[in-house]
Length: 94
Image 1 (spheres, rainbow, N blue to C red):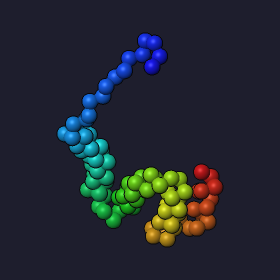
Image 2: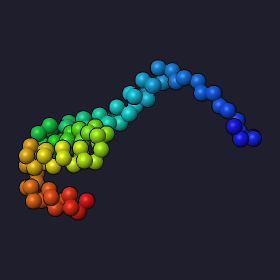
Image 3: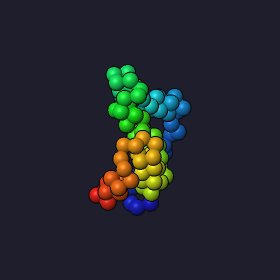
Image 4: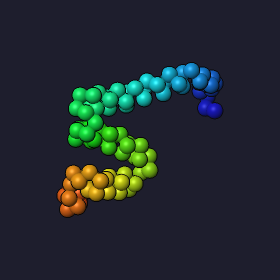
C-alpha cells in the first residue's frame, strides 16, 4: 500500500437495506408504467410502448446485439408498428 493510503474495511450491507433499495427502484420502474396503463388502458399504444421498452430494458443486459434483434422482431412482427424497411432505416440511422 502506498505511503499515506488508508485501508478501509467495509461492513457487509444489511439485508434490510438491500431490500429497501430494491423496493425503491422497483417502484421507480412500476409506478410510471402502472400510471400509463391506468390513464390510457392496457390496449392503448402508449401502454404497449411502455411495457415493450420495460421488457427491452431487461434484455439490454444481453448486449446491444441481443436488444436490436429482439426489438426488430417485436416491432415488425409482433406489434406491426414498423415495416421491415422502416426498421432497417432506423437501425442504419442509429
